[in-house]
Length: 94
Image 1 (spheres, helix red, strand yellow):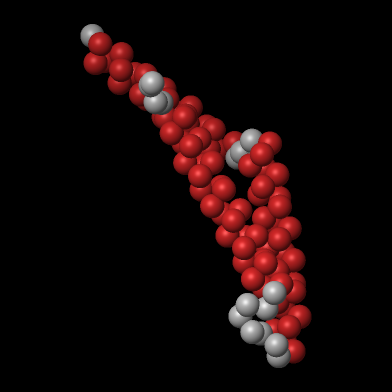
Image 2 (cartoon, helix red, strand yellow):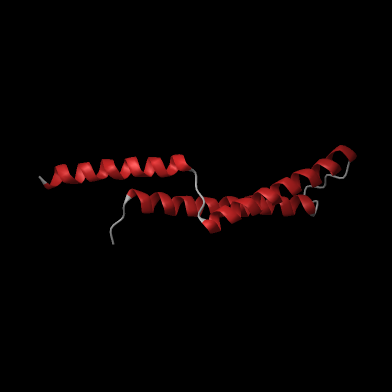
């Protein structure tokens, strides 16, 4: 099996993306169930606001992960890295 920059970057992005989805949704859950015991008034409202924002962003990240939506600059970086590796390989074969 041959690995190229594209497959390595894709695997790293998938693992990191899945980890961050768990972090966002986990923090949202912990805030909703009051794990941190924030019962006073300013924190009570902020707790629900932050939990809702984290849950929505976690769901959005999950959607992007499943659909494979990615940022353009990462794809551009992968293409440049692959071109660089191809030129290095062609120099080695000569």
